[in-house]
Image 1 (cartoon, rainbow, N blue to C red):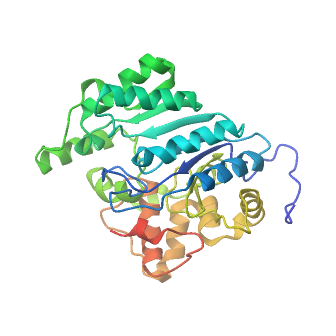
Image 2 (spheres, helix red, strand yellow):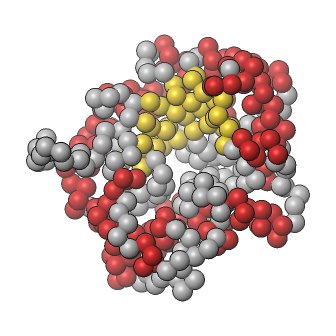
Length: 338
């Protein structure tokens, strides 16, 4: 298919089928968290219509021989509650695979009747789990009591096994960080970032990485990104049809259109990933290999070093976007803006 040679016995499949996908229903969010790898914010948008969501859902399932588990996120999907509920109801009516989970920061959980009504509606519409973001970064914008209310009511209505909280240790002992002094809050962010649970892409690369211990780029030599980009089985798809690896914001595996389906994007990636300048280089040689590609574009490594290979990769890609290189593999442009 598409010129790919047959695999030899014992050889790994270079590009795994996508069996776990997140629909980015919007880049809008009431918060502007320091940890946001998608750089979501109140001024962002790109909402996904219910029609588009259902069509993408269907294509993702049909493109993989294993099917595809779907989760709904953003941004903040509860920012457009009617559309979120419509998507869930239509997916259930259409007989699509069960909805894995919905991600939220619980900003909408202002009172118990609202929480109960919405969770009952989503449960009836086929939602599997509710995933609540709770950490010092989100609590700069969302009162922690709203997260606790959503988690408590969800546990009562859905069962504790259907409620995920990122992070439960913070939910139990955390507090609102909005009124903290900037310096004190920054130290708290740094302490939590040291746990390694944050993806150092997007705003996290700008706001959290500088608070962490840095290493010379040579430290990340010989670290391939093939597992994350080609073999993780996880992708995100947004309203503009951008298909991105699940943990690598701003890298484009392809872009959907009326003439290009999910299956075709996967087949194209399987056929030519090795010769793509960004994806192929990262899969083969990691961010240090990408650094060599970016030198003609004026990339100069920081003498302070980098907090991890993802931080290094992000800064290299940011430079490439600044000079307009590789627009087919890097985007959206606003995600890389400081």
